[in-house]
Length: 114
Length: 113
Image 1: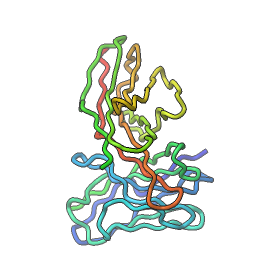
Image 2 (image 1 turned 180 degrees about the vertical axis):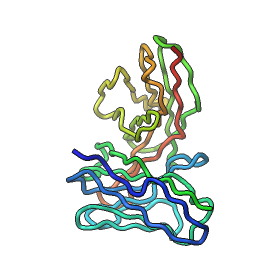
Image 3 (image 1 turned 30 degrees about the vertical axis):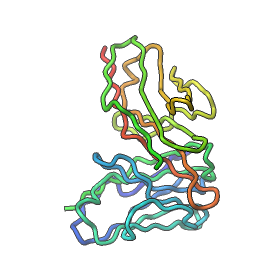
């Protein structure tokens, strides 16, 4: 079965712009999480969605937001981009998001803010 | 605060030598621990869950609550084990039924032929 698909793979944006990243989870998976990966901070949790509801949010400013659709596909949005938002954004899906299950990660979207 | 520490950024070992990737955690509750691996140009993938007590690709990891450690071990390293390894702590999130992963900074394992 198809894995977690993230689009686009690469993005270059200008400071102050906004960006939308997309994630299609594994078929049947209802939990989608987003992580930011940077060389300095490593992998950091952004938020988690389950059945179109945000269940959990990490310690990121309000410029970072997301949503989940009825087919479990998810988008994350970053408004008023800053240089420090340059990172690899990873999406991960899980059947129901239970703690005993591991997440399946996508390949990520590499965002560069100039 | 919950924290995962991987003290080695880079670990180089010779093929056939034993490997131990260190992971220490800081958490007052009952931890759920994972090892993830990222091979070159591949996506991050789950290697081990502590709760399943499994051995994957010859790797094992034992939870030591007294030392708050979850070290990853393999008796004989292979060249294909070269990769980035991340230890992660699963924490219950604020929403019912949710959880999030807190990752260590990772250790790059290089197996020398």
